[in-house]
Image (cartoon, one colour):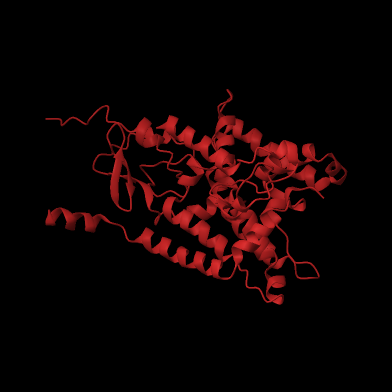
Length: 297
Length: 54
């Protein structure tokens, strides 16, 4: 199953970054496919990006909502929120585990041999703060004299944007190097921090700071595809704890906000068929049973 | 057969379908307001300040 997931991650990486003419055009993809959203976190200013970023777009629309209304246009971000909500209702954070290029990059970095550390659990609420403050409130209310806000998460925080768009663009367009300043330095430091952290901890950005992950986490109870726990089969052996890349203790909290439905607990850890995948309430897959519980006389 | 159908109906969770239908309505409302055009307009232009340049 892990092999399949890796391939799905690669395919989604290429689908959302399929514009390979950028070394010749030295610019981003300007075509109509960019009306489709990338399900995961993928900067739309990345030269290879063929889709738009949900987090970037919603900030742009909220930041300019006053100007739009003044111009008689009603752009509240409904198309973007609708797209994100449909994906969230279908898959929730499964998208983080299967279709997010930046999540995939973090997973690859974590394969570098090094001591591994846990991510402190209280930090996992940070992503909701980033979603509420940097993606919604600041773009809406931190406005200039003309009433225009900014894309604060992209501008000050997003390490995916620095890695996928900022760095490639300054190589493709050398003139841009004259504009580099403290803002870019700040973003480089944040990017290095998260990439370095990814080597020693599993998916730290997804767990602590990703606003898209926070949005999808809101669907943890009401998503169509989800992992379920069969308490009759669960022996609370804790095997599912050790394999989870997000630090979820599945037998203790099967509807955890951080479950990315990577299926490792189901296919790799659980020996008692206690974890299964369901679609809309219908079980569709269980892990491969290796040892069955034996009745003791 | 009837029993099996009833059992399956009982298993089906309505929550996800309600959520998806709700966001589909929002999505269509966005389309009716011509938001995809605005999204495309933003997405095809590089926003330098958004990526920390300038």
